[in-house]
Amino acid sequence: MKGRSAYSSIYRQGSGESSYSQRSSDLSLDEEREHFRRDTERQALLQLEKSRSKPVAFAVKTNVAFDGTLDDDSPVHGYAVSFGIGDYLHIMERYDQNWWIGRKVQVNCDIGFIPSPAKLETLRILLAQNKNAKVYANKQTNSSSKLFQPKKKPGNSNPKDASMDSEDTLDGEEETTAAAPPSRRNTAEAGSESDHQTPTGVSSLVEQERKKKGLLGKKQEQIPPYDVVPSMRPVVIIGPSLKGYEVTDMMQKALFDFLKRRFESRIIITRVTSDISLAKKNVLNNPSKRALIEKSNTRSSSMAEVQSEVERIFELAKTLQLVVLDCDTINHPSQLLKTSLNPILVYLQISSPKVLQRLVKSRGKSQTRNMNVQLVASEKLALCPLDMWDILLHENSLEEASEHLSSWLEEYWAATHPPMKPAPAALQRSIPPTLQRPGGQKNNRTTSPERSRKTGRTDGRRGQSNQDDLEFQQMRQRYDEE
Image 1: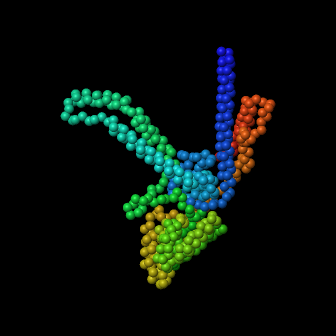
Image 2: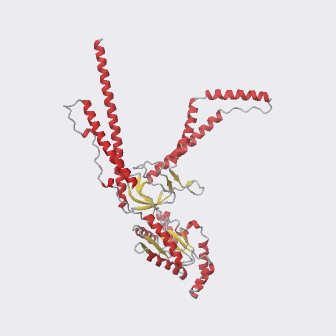
Image 3: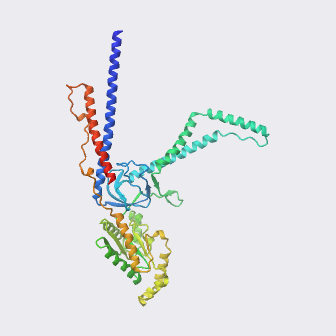
């Protein structure tokens, strides 16, 4: 008996030591994970600060809406950039496969983390799965509720019998509900829970309605989340009538001269002779369509010239200066809607046709012969909906119209050129070294028992982790304040 009790006490003592060591190892692993997460977030903050001084790599226009405040799993919590459909984003660099570093082109919008197309595709798949799960849960809930509905009594029964039957029916309902299979009730409860949970998870991404295409309209158009656009949207002035006639050319030249003086060393005014309306996104990416257009348009410039002209505009926009295009062939905003240029469309309007007639007559007989063509073109521009234009210049004098245009471009300049903020002092220091793993530390196994070795390693890691966490919190607080 004594031997058995001694053996059991030894066994219990050993099990206590093993459980203590297991708890301490779990604690140390949790601390390592937390410290690794904080160290990763610290490095992401440093990378975010370095990107402030980097040039814009490229720009995109959004076809989806993303709310980073609802589902923020960005490298630094709270620094995901939210945007709506049709917003413009400046991308500085790719952080990893799921996130870019950039900012929304808007005044007082700071740099942050932008979801990449791969990340948005993952969110879209989760959105579709949640929708399917919600529909399936609703179907099961409806089917289970119909299964246990009471049967209706015939209408020719006596009132007393009806009241008795209703009481019996209520009792039967309670019994049936109590005796219902637990699996169906659990399914209904799960469906109701999923109804409450899915909206919060899926509302971070909003997609456009996909247009149906094909003869029967069964295929849906695949819309990418982003469209690559010039880093600075080019300015295109249209109106008051057709290009190539003296009235239109004279009024647009007056605007060009004013902008050149106002935005000296900040603007590029270039002439475009190619028909850039042919530079549609689906045409440039499809060689067969490009060949068909080249055969049908013998008068206009070839697609190679158009593509080179578009590339030249993209290169000019990389300088982040204002780019103004003096286009010879653009007389209507619909010509540029399907291109990848996404220009700032300016409508130089003459509200009264009589004023346009007087201006045309004042230019001589050669211009008066083509008065009807210019009047028809002016009427077509006046019929365009207002949402097709970015700026509408309807002032009575060119000076007022020029001031209106320049004030709008000043706001756009401020949105694309945010003021440089000094880096916080905590971010200017080097990142503290990461913790070494326990296997890489040297321990004196001969002078201390096993428990003291584990306790010493844990305390050392705790002290270093607390010091790094304190420094990280101070750095994060200063970064948020500045």
